[in-house]
View 1: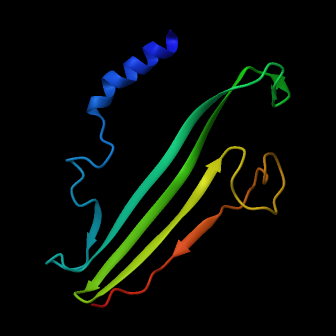
View 2 (view 1 turned 120 degrees about the vertical axis):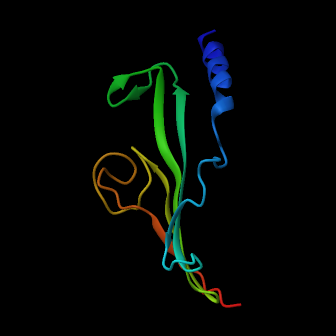
Length: 135
């Protein structure tokens, strides 16, 4: 019954949330390089995260303590896109981000500590710079 009330409460407030942009957003984080605004640098940031609850089997242990459920919060995708329009025919695009970061997993092998890859884990950061746009 408690889960039903929680779901109904979230459904009632969800009509005021924006999932794909907002009317107040405008052009985002844009830095004009000249007064005409045809040369600029623009940054776009986005994140997909999840919060999950797992019902555990009887006798399950988390951190050495018995528990019947477990909560987890993680970044599924965290991205930054930066592009600079230097001239009418020249644009530089930079896209970088990170995937699957939680408190217990993610990162890359080679570190020590808790979790799959350690407490001081190295991030699986990717960097992509596609070819220049020159029409």
